Image (cartoon, rainbow, N blue to C red; front, side, top):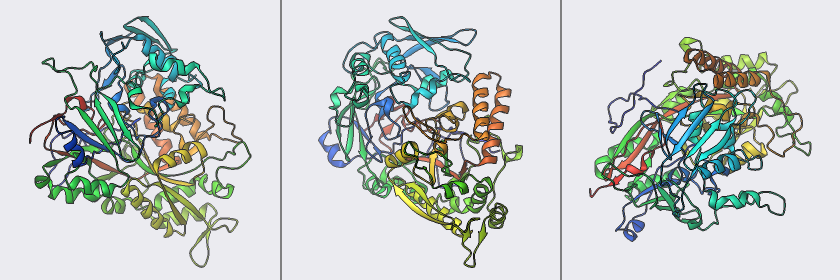
Length: 602
């Protein structure tokens, strides 16, 4: 196992070492920056930093968001926050918290004088409203409810107000990751949203579900973070302005944030993003492996530096739709013929052996990555290494073919793979359009599979559309994707969103959503084992025993292969020299300390 450490200095052209990083999901914000010179000239008297997102946010309603494309991390805060360098939990809206001896009661004390971006007081009533009326409201379809399920029963905590500044959470049982979960959840304004929770539309659904959509006037979206929304032009940009009522100040008493505006350009093409950064229009950009050498050569001329945050959070993978259910009309989500292939373990193992990940790392990621074997990153104290017994899948076409033959598949005279009923083995690979390296990865997988007789077509779609297919329509066959939750390497239970059979992102076998009827939805025995291990991890407080539990979890995933891990690239970010206090790390979001950033006169 390799050792990693964080590097907050620019990386150089000498051989690269991987540095300490931590998985991030974020639910995670993809930001890389971009800002036209015209906008700079228009607001020359105010400081601004330009970031970028690859698509329009589908909503400005934080609890309803299921995509990383948004600005919620800049406009909202929760009770506590995570330090982006060392992953330690720190006070945010709550100045302190106390955990009872039996670990079942946590009391948070809010800072005095907190205000919303409209100047109204932020009190314990807002905290109770956010948790009780939104996150724990069964009529609100939010993924954040998963963070509040406690133990085997899945019961929720009781949230109650003690006074205007104190809130108490009472847990049904001791729950090790609860504080980490609380860090993920932002607080929303009761005085603005409460009426929409109880009022309903013609279909009897809460008006909250249609509140704060993309057509809402920005001034009506009230926030508590360092910024608030100033304007939004679809397919062009989102402009955030400094929140005059933000609670934080520096050691000299100056109100934060220092930067007056953040401008998020909506740029769907990474090639276009790169061109605009090189032309000087953009302040910062996420550096892809394909662009690294070019941008490295231009650092001095472009007045920027490239920073290495270590391995990216999360994991990239390829996986099959294992869902054997039918919708309410009796139609199968997956063609039953193909479903039989996908649910055959030897078929999945053969595909794993057929993919050349060394080639993928060298050609697509230019060697700026590491082959990944597990759902838990190598930097985690819970990581199970191959040397310690984790099963791995080397590139071996002959082994792949043998597995297929053992499973009952066969080859015709043209070396095309057929199943036991002489059906040609072919399927569609789904991949998002916004990231070139992801598309290139899908292309290579298509090529690798063709060498063992499997025919595949590519379906390249926007990520927002992909999320609908994965989590709602379920009409997909094979997917090249990625998943990550910030902090999951230190608290693996955060991965329950993906790995628990009732998790909101259990995409490879997505179960019924609230109010939905599925026929013949099956949870396999190994999925049930994973559920049991996740629950055991929740309940266990002894670190040695937790390592054993999460080691078993990794072993089951490696054996059953619901998804196959690919390459984990380095997290690289280019930032203009004029931006001060940029403290980059792979542990947290790129701009985790955005309120401390300054614009110099360089």
